[in-house]
Image (tube, rainbow, N blue to C red):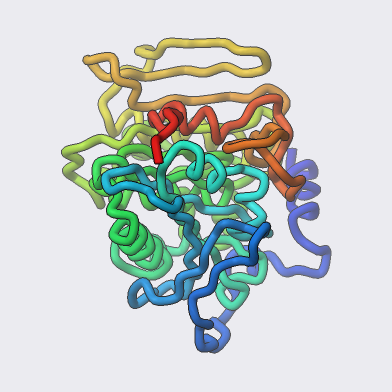
Length: 342
């Protein structure tokens, strides 16, 4: 198991890279003056970089797409990429911007800087970066507020999804700002507060820390004691993921299931080809926690090559052909698949 995990890490990093480089350099490089906002060339990415969206204490970059003519009151989706990815590469394979164009919602991408992390990993474990209104977490919160204002988005229909380090940061956003989001989808990620430094982060990736359901949920409860509107939690993990162990998906289930006081055996199970889905609904039948286990899938976002919104238009690192589009299925869970009228 240890050797297999080591090999998976070596695939992520050059052999000469240090362990700490995956997560956090010893110091931040001086910030360069941000370029003026710009639109990508015709035929390129639909994402537009925005440079003036707040104090940006985490020194992140913002890219977004608001379809032309989008009426007020439409949803907004925040997307957080994984290590060795950026907003454009993730979007080419996940198809969130093209789906937003078809179905009528705004998309915002947070992007890590090499000055923060040379592997472009979000710093999902460091307390100073994942505490409410601090660091990278605050930067991402400012991005959501800015994009929602620009698009006049429905504040009741703001969602977040992310892969790997971006999935762990998704869990941190949901834990710290549950009032902001109607739902979140965590792909090959880790529970909130699974680690507090780089060494323990690597250990958690190899195997989720041993904690009771109550101990996992208390990590969220302690920072968000009152959650008047419970965001729906969708968890996606491959059974063959040897980079972020599947035990993290199970720990995520326990963190949110216990927080929402849902009985452990109170789930409905569905089976599709190559996939097992368990759904924990509330007393009114609304799905609150959903766990998708994908047979044989390694570390990455499940995608489906094709044309149109939500399909993969490009082969990218850690975006895995799976015979289905997780983007389309997550959007369906959130009620975003109905076409809009321009």
